Amino acid sequence: MTISATPEVGTIAPNSSFAGAIEADAVIIGAGPVGLFQVFELGLLEIKAHVIDSLPAVGGQCVELYPDKPIYDIPAVPVCTGQELTDNLLKQIEPFEPTFHLGQEVTTVQRREDHRFNVETSTGTRFITKTTSRKVNFATPGRPTFWMVFNPPRYFMRLSLRSIGHNVPREDAKWMGDLLGALTPNQIRDAFRAAGYSPEEVEGFARTVEGRISALRAL
Ligand SMILES: Cc1cc2nc3c(=O)[nH]c(=O)nc-3n(C[C@H](O)[C@H](O)[C@H](O)COP(=O)(O)OP(=O)(O)OC[C@H]3O[C@@H](n4cnc5c(N)ncnc54)[C@H](O)[C@@H]3O)c2cc1C
Image (cartoon, rainbow, N blue to C red; front, side):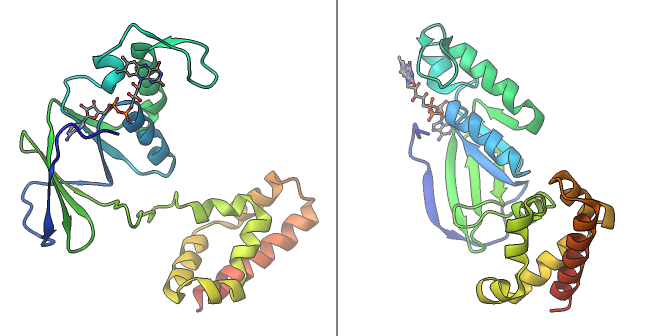
């Protein structure tokens, strides 16, 4: 993504006093093809995005500079125009319901003491971002570790108390236990059924998982 003007990147700002700011999971600066696809990637992680662009329309260079020029180098798309590429990206990200803030340039990006960012635009729209470059907040049920339940070998590896004890802070392991503890017995069994195990194997694995979850929660 290119930055058309250099926003003011200030010194560390206090955590409070950014009046009227929208608390955003993620703020994407630039609604070009890269910014639009970023909405998709974040959406898969259940991170909702606000997208800001100084131009009045989305699409970046593709729409602003060459809407009708054919593009030949998109994988699996033999040919499309700049406008068609943008329209398809918009269709692809529709399920993730991004919020667009067009016709406003980002003028301030300021790191806060809590490592989040204050972002402000030329029209005075303010954001406090939750997701930072150093740390992504996946604290939702969509966190990838949750989905490991559908990959039994990997799931067991991560559930190994020894490996957790070596690699993961204790509070994190407890947190994971609490999260997994929200699974119903049926959900746990469904994961192994979906992997094609016999009813006996499903029951055996599910019991083991339930035991491990209890152990994690008791840490
Ligand atoms: C004439 C031409 C033909 C091209 N043909 C091809 C081709 O055939 N195939 C190909 O692969 N590539 C082609 N390219 C290159 C391609 O268009 C770019 O690589 C692509 O657009 C980059 O996408 P992007 O999202 O990173 O950035 P951009 O498309 O540049 O979008 C960045 C967006 O960020 C916004 N922005 C920047 N700073 C701020 C700010 N501070 N606040 C708010 N908004 C901001 C801008 O307004 C812009 O909309 C061509 C480029 C041109 C100019």
